[in-house]
Image (cartoon, rainbow, N blue to C red; front, top):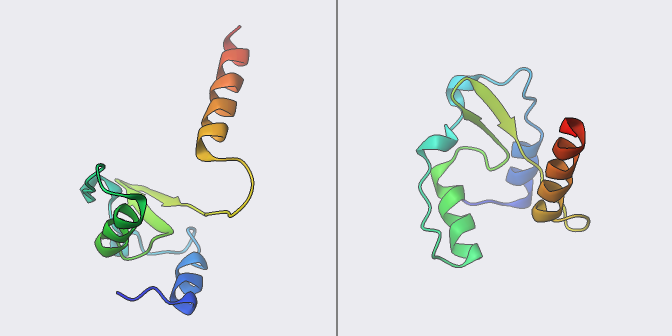
Length: 89
């Protein structure tokens, strides 16, 4: 599947409230060699899914988005864990 700008925009525009879950790839079925460089891991992911933005985990629809600037996923995870620790103190 060639990921043109138009195709990526089409994938990103999928509404998770109305998407047919049976058309989505279950993320639990995707296998990626973590020893590969990032570009190859992204390529492996794209080849194994119907939509790089919208997938499922079992009966749950999952939508991700990517940003060029801002906090990294590590920063967001640290923030999330900090919030969890504050709730339980």
